[in-house]
Length: 50
Image (cartoon, rainbow, N blue to C red; front, side):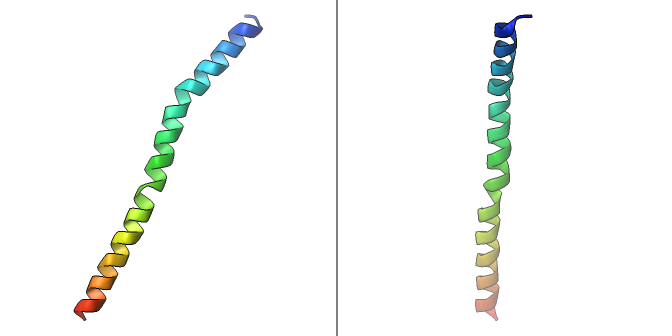
C-alpha cells in the first residue's frame, strides 16, 4: 500500500460518508422548527379557544 492508495481510500471514505452526515444533519434540524411552529400554532389556537 503506497501513499496514493491511502489517499484514495481516505477520499472514498469521505465521499461515502458525506451523504449520511448530510442526511443525519437535515433529519435532526428539519423537524425542530416545524415542531416548534406547530406547537406554537396549537398553543395559540387552544389559547384562542379558551
